[in-house]
Amino acid sequence: MVRPVKWRKVCSLPENSKFGPLDSPMGARNYVNMTVDEYETIRLIDLEGFTQEECGKQMNIARSTVQGIYNEARKKLAESLVNGKVLLIEGGEYRLCDGLGNGCGPGCNRKRRGRNFKHNED
Image (cartoon, rainbow, N blue to C red; front, top):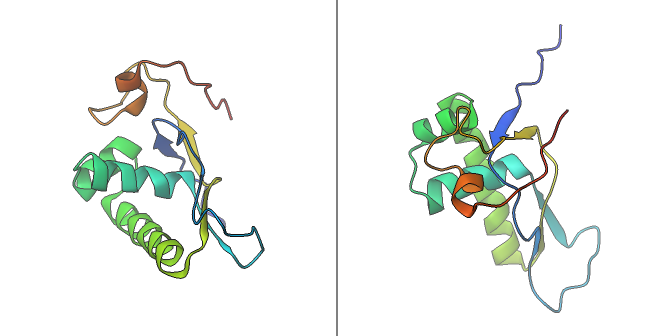
């Protein structure tokens, strides 16, 4: 039996979802796809200074899951930087928080920015 999907809580989508060399053509082999939940682990751990355990609590997932997501995200960042590939941030198994403090912690980007983001109702 297939295990049900456990949605990862994400507090905001990236303001920019495409990064890379300015002179790079978009080809099938010239980009790396990072999911939104991978982006969120990078944001929380590397930018906000969270531990993997704190990140897990913020995203509503286990620390061991955070570790796997984070390791994969770092590999994708390295591949983009070292090999000059475009980094696209899209997709993944996530739901946006409501920004109202319902289970969100100090790393909630929606509360800090004070903006209204569209809520994923799925």
